[in-house]
Length: 392
Image (cartoon, rainbow, N blue to C red; front, side, top):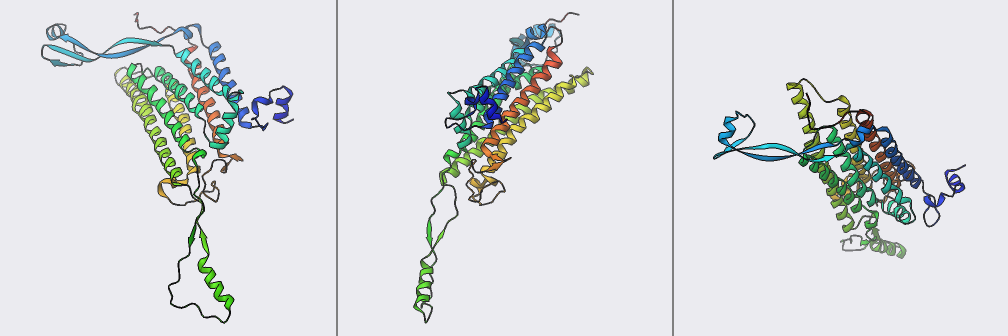
Protein backbone atom coordinates (compact mmCIF):
# COMPACT_ATOMS: atom_id res chain seq x y z
CA UNK A 1 0.00 0.00 0.00
CA UNK A 2 1.37 3.39 -1.00
CA UNK A 3 1.73 6.33 1.36
CA UNK A 4 -1.12 8.18 -0.35
CA UNK A 5 -3.48 5.20 -0.10
CA UNK A 6 -2.66 4.83 3.57
CA UNK A 7 -3.42 8.50 4.19
CA UNK A 8 -6.67 8.26 2.22
CA UNK A 9 -7.79 5.34 4.38
CA UNK A 10 -7.51 7.50 7.49
CA UNK A 11 -8.97 10.59 5.81
CA UNK A 12 -5.70 12.56 6.03
CA UNK A 13 -4.81 12.80 2.35
CA UNK A 14 -6.21 16.34 2.02
CA UNK A 15 -3.45 17.67 4.28
CA UNK A 16 -0.78 16.47 1.86
CA UNK A 17 -2.31 17.42 -1.49
CA UNK A 18 -2.60 20.80 -3.18
CA UNK A 19 -5.75 22.38 -4.57
CA UNK A 20 -5.44 20.32 -7.76
CA UNK A 21 -5.39 17.10 -5.75
CA UNK A 22 -1.70 16.39 -6.42
CA UNK A 23 0.15 14.58 -3.62
CA UNK A 24 3.48 16.02 -2.42
CA UNK A 25 5.97 14.00 -0.39
CA UNK A 26 7.61 17.01 1.23
CA UNK A 27 4.27 17.88 2.89
CA UNK A 28 4.41 14.50 4.64
CA UNK A 29 7.97 15.08 5.81
CA UNK A 30 7.06 18.57 6.98
CA UNK A 31 4.21 17.20 9.10
CA UNK A 32 6.36 14.37 10.49
CA UNK A 33 9.08 16.85 11.45
CA UNK A 34 6.49 19.12 13.08
CA UNK A 35 5.20 16.29 15.26
CA UNK A 36 8.81 15.34 15.98
CA UNK A 37 9.32 18.82 17.45
CA UNK A 38 6.13 18.43 19.48
CA UNK A 39 7.31 15.07 20.79
CA UNK A 40 10.64 16.62 21.75
CA UNK A 41 8.81 19.29 23.76
CA UNK A 42 6.64 16.71 25.53
CA UNK A 43 9.48 14.33 26.36
CA UNK A 44 11.74 17.20 27.42
CA UNK A 45 9.11 18.36 29.89
CA UNK A 46 8.76 14.84 31.24
CA UNK A 47 12.52 14.14 31.28
CA UNK A 48 13.59 17.20 33.25
CA UNK A 49 13.68 17.09 37.03
CA UNK A 50 11.41 19.30 39.11
CA UNK A 51 14.41 21.42 40.10
CA UNK A 52 15.55 21.60 36.48
CA UNK A 53 12.16 23.03 35.49
CA UNK A 54 12.29 25.77 38.11
CA UNK A 55 15.96 26.77 37.94
CA UNK A 56 16.65 30.28 36.71
CA UNK A 57 19.99 31.41 35.31
CA UNK A 58 21.09 34.84 36.54
CA UNK A 59 21.99 37.33 33.83
CA UNK A 60 24.45 40.05 34.77
CA UNK A 61 24.75 43.55 33.43
CA UNK A 62 28.03 45.48 33.51
CA UNK A 63 28.14 49.02 34.82
CA UNK A 64 30.73 51.60 35.79
CA UNK A 65 31.06 52.01 39.58
CA UNK A 66 32.26 55.39 40.88
CA UNK A 67 34.18 55.37 44.16
CA UNK A 68 35.86 58.10 46.15
CA UNK A 69 39.63 57.75 45.82
CA UNK A 70 40.21 58.22 49.53
CA UNK A 71 37.78 55.46 50.52
CA UNK A 72 39.03 53.24 47.72
CA UNK A 73 42.62 53.49 48.94
CA UNK A 74 41.59 53.10 52.60
CA UNK A 75 39.86 49.82 51.79
CA UNK A 76 43.02 48.65 50.00
CA UNK A 77 40.99 47.51 47.00
CA UNK A 78 42.68 46.09 43.92
CA UNK A 79 39.77 46.11 41.50
CA UNK A 80 40.64 47.03 37.91
CA UNK A 81 39.77 50.63 37.16
CA UNK A 82 41.12 54.09 36.42
CA UNK A 83 41.27 57.44 38.20
CA UNK A 84 39.42 60.57 37.20
CA UNK A 85 40.21 63.49 39.49
CA UNK A 86 39.01 62.56 42.96
CA UNK A 87 37.26 59.39 41.82
CA UNK A 88 38.21 55.84 40.92
CA UNK A 89 36.00 54.39 38.21
CA UNK A 90 35.57 50.62 38.00
CA UNK A 91 34.06 49.94 34.54
CA UNK A 92 33.86 46.15 34.93
CA UNK A 93 31.49 45.99 37.88
CA UNK A 94 28.38 43.89 37.30
CA UNK A 95 25.08 43.13 38.97
CA UNK A 96 22.25 40.68 38.36
CA UNK A 97 19.61 42.29 36.16
CA UNK A 98 17.56 39.44 34.66
CA UNK A 99 16.82 35.75 35.05
CA UNK A 100 16.33 33.18 32.28
CA UNK A 101 14.91 29.68 32.43
CA UNK A 102 17.00 27.30 30.35
CA UNK A 103 14.25 24.69 30.57
CA UNK A 104 11.52 26.88 29.09
CA UNK A 105 13.86 28.23 26.42
CA UNK A 106 14.35 24.63 25.24
CA UNK A 107 10.61 23.95 25.33
CA UNK A 108 9.93 27.18 23.45
CA UNK A 109 12.12 26.46 20.41
CA UNK A 110 10.61 22.98 20.10
CA UNK A 111 7.06 24.39 20.24
CA UNK A 112 7.90 27.26 17.88
CA UNK A 113 9.20 24.80 15.30
CA UNK A 114 6.08 22.66 15.69
CA UNK A 115 3.74 25.62 15.27
CA UNK A 116 5.47 27.21 12.28
CA UNK A 117 5.76 23.89 10.44
CA UNK A 118 2.33 22.42 11.14
CA UNK A 119 0.47 25.53 9.98
CA UNK A 120 2.00 25.00 6.54
CA UNK A 121 -0.09 21.81 6.21
CA UNK A 122 -3.35 23.57 7.08
CA UNK A 123 -5.94 24.56 4.48
CA UNK A 124 -5.06 28.24 4.85
CA UNK A 125 -1.32 27.94 4.11
CA UNK A 126 -0.90 24.63 2.26
CA UNK A 127 -1.43 25.86 -1.30
CA UNK A 128 0.73 28.91 -0.65
CA UNK A 129 3.45 26.66 0.77
CA UNK A 130 3.37 24.26 -2.19
CA UNK A 131 3.34 27.00 -4.82
CA UNK A 132 6.01 29.03 -3.06
CA UNK A 133 8.40 26.10 -2.70
CA UNK A 134 7.87 24.28 -5.99
CA UNK A 135 7.40 27.25 -8.33
CA UNK A 136 9.68 29.83 -6.74
CA UNK A 137 12.03 27.87 -4.47
CA UNK A 138 11.18 30.14 -1.51
CA UNK A 139 9.73 29.55 1.96
CA UNK A 140 9.70 32.85 3.89
CA UNK A 141 7.91 31.32 6.88
CA UNK A 142 10.84 28.94 7.38
CA UNK A 143 13.34 31.76 7.85
CA UNK A 144 10.98 33.77 10.06
CA UNK A 145 10.81 30.74 12.38
CA UNK A 146 14.59 30.28 12.21
CA UNK A 147 15.16 33.92 13.16
CA UNK A 148 13.39 33.22 16.46
CA UNK A 149 14.20 29.58 17.23
CA UNK A 150 17.85 29.68 16.15
CA UNK A 151 18.39 32.78 18.29
CA UNK A 152 16.90 30.97 21.29
CA UNK A 153 19.12 27.95 20.60
CA UNK A 154 22.26 30.08 20.60
CA UNK A 155 21.20 31.79 23.84
CA UNK A 156 20.70 28.33 25.39
CA UNK A 157 24.19 27.37 24.28
CA UNK A 158 25.55 30.58 25.83
CA UNK A 159 23.84 29.88 29.16
CA UNK A 160 25.31 26.39 29.53
CA UNK A 161 28.68 27.87 28.52
CA UNK A 162 28.29 30.28 31.47
CA UNK A 163 28.16 33.33 29.23
CA UNK A 164 25.74 35.31 31.36
CA UNK A 165 26.47 38.88 30.32
CA UNK A 166 23.30 40.64 29.18
CA UNK A 167 25.06 42.44 26.33
CA UNK A 168 26.68 39.22 25.06
CA UNK A 169 23.31 37.43 25.06
CA UNK A 170 21.63 40.32 23.25
CA UNK A 171 24.44 40.37 20.68
CA UNK A 172 24.23 36.60 20.12
CA UNK A 173 20.46 36.66 19.73
CA UNK A 174 20.34 39.66 17.43
CA UNK A 175 23.22 38.56 15.19
CA UNK A 176 21.69 35.09 14.83
CA UNK A 177 18.32 36.60 13.90
CA UNK A 178 20.00 38.90 11.38
CA UNK A 179 21.78 35.90 9.87
CA UNK A 180 18.48 34.13 9.24
CA UNK A 181 16.91 37.26 7.78
CA UNK A 182 19.88 37.61 5.42
CA UNK A 183 19.18 34.00 4.39
CA UNK A 184 15.54 34.91 3.76
CA UNK A 185 16.59 37.88 1.65
CA UNK A 186 19.04 35.79 -0.40
CA UNK A 187 16.45 33.10 -1.08
CA UNK A 188 13.82 35.65 -2.10
CA UNK A 189 16.22 37.43 -4.45
CA UNK A 190 16.97 34.06 -6.08
CA UNK A 191 13.27 33.31 -6.45
CA UNK A 192 12.37 31.71 -9.76
CA UNK A 193 9.55 34.26 -9.92
CA UNK A 194 12.09 36.95 -10.86
CA UNK A 195 13.87 34.77 -13.40
CA UNK A 196 13.00 36.38 -16.75
CA UNK A 197 14.78 35.38 -19.94
CA UNK A 198 15.67 37.84 -22.67
CA UNK A 199 13.77 37.13 -25.88
CA UNK A 200 15.75 35.42 -28.58
CA UNK A 201 17.05 38.16 -30.79
CA UNK A 202 18.26 38.05 -34.35
CA UNK A 203 21.57 39.53 -35.31
CA UNK A 204 22.36 39.94 -39.03
CA UNK A 205 25.43 38.14 -40.10
CA UNK A 206 28.41 40.31 -40.96
CA UNK A 207 28.33 41.60 -44.53
CA UNK A 208 30.89 40.55 -47.04
CA UNK A 209 32.88 43.63 -48.04
CA UNK A 210 34.17 42.15 -51.29
CA UNK A 211 33.50 44.27 -54.32
CA UNK A 212 31.97 41.58 -56.52
CA UNK A 213 29.61 38.71 -55.92
CA UNK A 214 30.82 35.20 -56.38
CA UNK A 215 30.68 34.24 -60.08
CA UNK A 216 28.44 31.28 -60.73
CA UNK A 217 26.88 29.73 -63.81
CA UNK A 218 23.79 28.84 -61.76
CA UNK A 219 21.45 31.60 -60.68
CA UNK A 220 20.34 29.40 -57.80
CA UNK A 221 23.86 29.46 -56.36
CA UNK A 222 23.94 33.26 -56.52
CA UNK A 223 20.61 33.46 -54.75
CA UNK A 224 21.80 30.91 -52.21
CA UNK A 225 24.90 32.94 -51.38
CA UNK A 226 22.86 36.11 -51.07
CA UNK A 227 20.37 34.28 -48.87
CA UNK A 228 23.17 33.16 -46.56
CA UNK A 229 24.08 36.79 -45.94
CA UNK A 230 20.56 37.46 -44.80
CA UNK A 231 20.35 34.48 -42.47
CA UNK A 232 20.28 35.21 -38.81
CA UNK A 233 22.02 33.77 -35.82
CA UNK A 234 20.11 33.03 -32.57
CA UNK A 235 21.59 34.14 -29.31
CA UNK A 236 21.92 31.60 -26.51
CA UNK A 237 19.26 31.93 -23.84
CA UNK A 238 20.31 34.24 -21.05
CA UNK A 239 18.78 35.97 -18.05
CA UNK A 240 17.51 39.52 -18.26
CA UNK A 241 19.54 42.30 -16.69
CA UNK A 242 17.06 42.61 -13.81
CA UNK A 243 17.29 38.90 -13.01
CA UNK A 244 21.07 39.06 -12.97
CA UNK A 245 21.11 42.12 -10.71
CA UNK A 246 18.72 40.52 -8.24
CA UNK A 247 20.92 37.44 -8.03
CA UNK A 248 23.98 39.60 -7.46
CA UNK A 249 22.20 41.16 -4.50
CA UNK A 250 21.25 37.66 -3.41
CA UNK A 251 24.92 36.69 -3.19
CA UNK A 252 25.65 39.86 -1.19
CA UNK A 253 22.85 39.01 1.24
CA UNK A 254 24.05 35.42 1.57
CA UNK A 255 27.66 36.29 2.36
CA UNK A 256 26.49 39.03 4.74
CA UNK A 257 24.74 36.27 6.67
CA UNK A 258 28.04 34.44 7.04
CA UNK A 259 29.63 37.61 8.45
CA UNK A 260 26.93 38.07 11.08
CA UNK A 261 26.97 34.38 12.03
CA UNK A 262 30.75 34.27 12.37
CA UNK A 263 30.62 37.45 14.45
CA UNK A 264 28.10 35.83 16.80
CA UNK A 265 29.50 32.32 16.99
CA UNK A 266 33.23 32.98 16.80
CA UNK A 267 33.47 36.58 17.94
CA UNK A 268 31.30 36.17 21.03
CA UNK A 269 30.46 32.57 21.89
CA UNK A 270 33.71 30.74 21.13
CA UNK A 271 35.97 33.60 22.19
CA UNK A 272 34.33 34.01 25.59
CA UNK A 273 33.94 30.29 26.23
CA UNK A 274 37.49 29.25 25.40
CA UNK A 275 38.97 32.32 27.09
CA UNK A 276 37.10 31.23 30.22
CA UNK A 277 38.39 27.66 29.84
CA UNK A 278 41.96 28.91 29.48
CA UNK A 279 41.75 31.19 32.50
CA UNK A 280 40.24 28.46 34.68
CA UNK A 281 42.89 25.93 33.74
CA UNK A 282 45.67 28.40 34.52
CA UNK A 283 44.29 29.77 37.77
CA UNK A 284 41.93 27.16 39.19
CA UNK A 285 43.01 23.94 37.47
CA UNK A 286 39.40 23.17 36.53
CA UNK A 287 37.41 23.24 33.28
CA UNK A 288 33.79 22.99 32.17
CA UNK A 289 32.40 19.51 31.36
CA UNK A 290 33.52 18.07 28.04
CA UNK A 291 29.94 17.62 26.84
CA UNK A 292 29.55 21.39 26.66
CA UNK A 293 32.54 21.65 24.33
CA UNK A 294 31.11 18.80 22.25
CA UNK A 295 27.74 20.53 22.01
CA UNK A 296 29.30 23.82 20.92
CA UNK A 297 31.09 22.17 18.00
CA UNK A 298 28.16 19.87 17.15
CA UNK A 299 25.77 22.79 16.91
CA UNK A 300 28.32 24.81 14.93
CA UNK A 301 28.49 21.94 12.43
CA UNK A 302 24.72 21.71 12.16
CA UNK A 303 24.40 25.49 11.76
CA UNK A 304 26.97 25.39 8.98
CA UNK A 305 24.91 22.73 7.21
CA UNK A 306 22.13 25.30 6.91
CA UNK A 307 24.58 27.79 5.41
CA UNK A 308 26.12 25.31 2.99
CA UNK A 309 22.65 24.11 1.98
CA UNK A 310 21.92 27.60 0.76
CA UNK A 311 25.34 27.84 -0.91
CA UNK A 312 24.48 24.62 -2.76
CA UNK A 313 21.07 26.00 -3.71
CA UNK A 314 22.41 29.31 -5.00
CA UNK A 315 25.31 27.72 -6.87
CA UNK A 316 22.97 25.41 -8.76
CA UNK A 317 20.74 28.34 -9.66
CA UNK A 318 23.64 30.62 -10.55
CA UNK A 319 26.66 28.37 -11.16
CA UNK A 320 30.05 29.88 -10.38
CA UNK A 321 28.41 33.28 -9.69
CA UNK A 322 27.44 33.76 -13.35
CA UNK A 323 25.43 36.86 -12.52
CA UNK A 324 28.67 38.52 -11.36
CA UNK A 325 31.14 37.15 -13.87
CA UNK A 326 28.86 37.06 -16.89
CA UNK A 327 30.54 33.85 -18.00
CA UNK A 328 28.39 31.11 -19.46
CA UNK A 329 29.87 28.27 -17.44
CA UNK A 330 27.89 25.07 -17.30
CA UNK A 331 27.20 22.80 -14.39
CA UNK A 332 26.17 19.16 -14.52
CA UNK A 333 23.06 19.98 -12.51
CA UNK A 334 21.97 22.92 -14.67
CA UNK A 335 19.75 22.58 -17.71
CA UNK A 336 21.36 23.22 -21.07
CA UNK A 337 19.76 26.65 -21.51
CA UNK A 338 21.47 27.88 -18.31
CA UNK A 339 18.15 29.22 -17.03
CA UNK A 340 19.03 28.63 -13.38
CA UNK A 341 15.42 27.67 -12.77
CA UNK A 342 15.04 25.63 -9.57
CA UNK A 343 12.06 23.80 -11.05
CA UNK A 344 14.22 22.40 -13.86
CA UNK A 345 17.33 21.55 -11.89
CA UNK A 346 17.15 17.97 -10.63
CA UNK A 347 18.67 16.85 -7.33
CA UNK A 348 18.27 13.39 -5.78
CA UNK A 349 15.51 12.50 -8.21
CA UNK A 350 13.37 15.58 -7.53
CA UNK A 351 13.45 19.27 -8.33
CA UNK A 352 16.06 21.40 -6.59
CA UNK A 353 13.34 23.48 -4.91
CA UNK A 354 11.76 20.44 -3.26
CA UNK A 355 15.10 18.84 -2.33
CA UNK A 356 16.31 22.00 -0.58
CA UNK A 357 13.07 22.27 1.40
CA UNK A 358 13.41 18.65 2.55
CA UNK A 359 17.01 19.29 3.60
CA UNK A 360 16.00 22.30 5.71
CA UNK A 361 13.12 20.42 7.35
CA UNK A 362 15.24 17.42 8.35
CA UNK A 363 18.26 19.45 9.46
CA UNK A 364 16.05 21.66 11.63
CA UNK A 365 14.62 18.62 13.40
CA UNK A 366 18.08 17.08 13.84
CA UNK A 367 19.79 20.18 15.25
CA UNK A 368 17.00 21.03 17.70
CA UNK A 369 16.76 17.41 18.87
CA UNK A 370 20.50 17.15 19.52
CA UNK A 371 20.66 20.46 21.38
CA UNK A 372 17.55 19.85 23.47
CA UNK A 373 18.28 16.30 24.50
CA UNK A 374 21.98 16.85 25.17
CA UNK A 375 21.09 19.61 27.63
CA UNK A 376 18.22 17.64 29.18
CA UNK A 377 20.28 14.48 29.64
CA UNK A 378 23.36 16.22 31.04
CA UNK A 379 21.98 19.15 32.98
CA UNK A 380 18.27 19.36 33.65
CA UNK A 381 17.94 15.84 35.09
CA UNK A 382 20.33 16.78 37.91
CA UNK A 383 18.73 17.82 41.15
CA UNK A 384 20.65 20.94 42.12
CA UNK A 385 19.53 24.49 42.66
CA UNK A 386 21.06 27.44 40.81
CA UNK A 387 21.49 30.41 43.11
CA UNK A 388 23.69 33.48 43.43
CA UNK A 389 24.14 32.82 47.16
CA UNK A 390 27.28 30.90 48.10
CA UNK A 391 27.05 28.87 51.32
CA UNK A 392 30.39 27.56 52.54
